[in-house]
Image (spheres, one colour):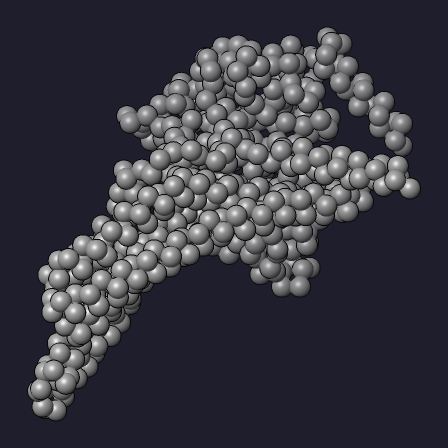
Length: 620
């Protein structure tokens, strides 16, 4: 029995170790915990987002903050004077008491009004700053090159725009202002205590250095654990995104149980990180309470002695007690604020890491607008590599005349899609040049280039919205008549009008209510509506059935007419009428010509076609 239990324990430990090892694949370079000291320059960079609202709103906040702090500091002092003057030893009448009561009530009223306006306007600034920061981050990410997205999963990017930005919300809405209020209040309390009685004030201040030394030792660890929390949240979001996108594959291979176990491992790790971070945060509270207890002991023990010596009145001792209580309150908040500041800094580092990311495909300062093009395209000794020392294109050259249709064929990984990526300038070549009408595309603006290039992919992306909106994506100012004309031209009109609401039918994310063929037809309509001078079809007919293909072939004649076109396809019906067929193998052009010429060569292209015929015969 003992042996069996040991075996089970060993198996359980092995399984847990395997899960941990599996989880390591979700550690991305951009999510590693950053071990950096507090960076005031970065904090100043965050504060720069407040500047647009400084003149409009900050004066109100500053006035409210000063009024609220002054009134709070005056109340204990008036209470002390009231006790001394109206008490048994003071001998003043009831009218004096009512005067003090009215003054204190007035101070509380001013304090309430100041707090109301301060909170209102700080929330306005905070929300506007978060709005600007999130908009800036999203706008910047839209401009980044494909290499940026190649290195990072979608979930990791989503965390930056949502969770990390949200974690700064409390800092901007209350944190910074409360920090200033607490600092001013502390200075004010210290000044008042030393003014009322220097001896007692200095005796109480003895506890401050002790608390400072103890709290400082916690800071680095608090920073580290909150960065670890952000890291684990990023991994969970990445895994969630991957799991949702791949749910069909997961269910098809009955991997739900394994996927749930893996998620449970990540979720547990995240919970433990949060527990540790919360524990470190709460370590400040007992530290403050113990220090405050020591301060209170000194206050009443030494204060009683000073009263006996006639150096302190009872009213001033009570004022002292109130001020000391008010002293530890901001100290406690400052400790919590420091933790909050560390959380914000951990998030801001991750946000600014993205904002500081420069596009690898960047426009030159002197880039000019690409005027309406004819469509002559040339690749001149182009070299490109996705990873260093692993070339995807090896010095290829290709001349394409305006209006020609070029078919790119070859096995997977031969470099077909790389041609397209370079032409659209999703990447820049390592060597050589890509030119349109004799102009290097690196010398023109990206927007003016891509606005004249249309692309239809095999995996068509359909956005949430109506059918009409998805077609209009190719030309946002298109009329309903133009949209329907484009749909009719590619054979999509018939299935659209048979949908429940026709062109106004709502489609969900990625268009899951549509078949793959229907989605492809929509992408053709979108491309036709955009009316690009250069058209790219990247396996665009791969998901279309034979019946639909007959309609598409007719539509392609209209789509390709008068345009320089590049077609990546394996179907003979799609490529045989191309003006040039370029055969690629391992990043090099091995054959080039029209269909008849290449078939007569009986070379690489001939072998591809023969293999396709044999496959079709076997299937049929």
